[in-house]
Amino acid sequence: METQISDPATSVDSDATFLPGPILLIGPPGAGKGTQAKNVMATWQIPQVSTGDLLRANVSAGTALGVQAKAIMGRGELVSDDLVNRMVAERLKEPDCVRGYILDGFPRTIGQAEWLDRHLAERSGGLPVVAVRLKVDYTHLVRRITGRRNCPTCGSIYNVYLHPPKDDERCDLDGTPLVRRSDDTEEVFTERLRTYEAQTAPVAAHYRAQNRLEDLDGDQPVDAVTAGILAAVKRLRS
Ligand code: AMP
Image (cartoon, rainbow, N blue to C red; front, side):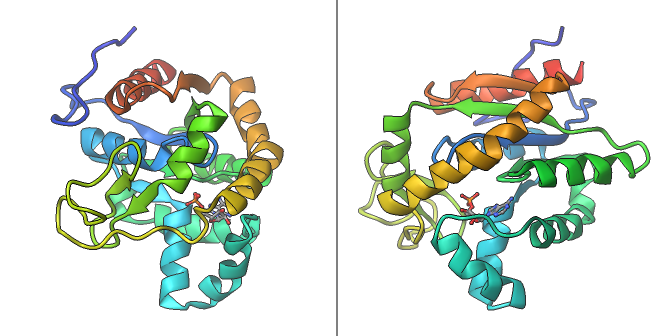
């Protein structure tokens, strides 16, 4: 079994021949998927494919998709499988996805998972998805969500309670004023969590049934969670 783990914050994983393939990070809102995706991305040099980020970019750009998605996202509900699947199919065609990618926030329904499995099986030589589920205590999720602030310039994620920026509400890296996502309120969080339990928890069961999912304690320090994800993916790929 492969157990070698790099320091995720500072180095590229030493096993340059390792092919990560498609990796799914699954977990409730506030579990740390975005933060962890960025660490795995830095370690293995593969992109993060976040459907939430792609949808927010469409909302900001005022595309037809963004117009349709905006109200749904504001209520904490899910955008239709068809729209999201098509958006993901376009993103996965990009050349940076060839060695693998980290799926953050997708698939979020059984319909999306079945579509993705078919889509990957149709690509010759493509690896199937392996999944890591982050488990986090409910009370911690609320603080992570209501305290979360993002840098609109570089995408860095902070938390005013747990990981505050050095300068009040500005990004440590580029000084940009941080913003709060409009759906990061306690009210919308409650709905997003309900949606997760009803629609996304079955996706974890789907991959578990195929022995392609490991659970991880997402309440550990950030670097320990990253190391756990890297090790889990290597085990699932061995
Ligand atoms: P996230 O940034 O992953 O928390 O996503 C923010 C919002 O975007 C969600 O609450 C949904 O409204 C929408 N969304 C993101 N990913 C998906 C998906 N895979 N399927 C449907 N809706 C999604």
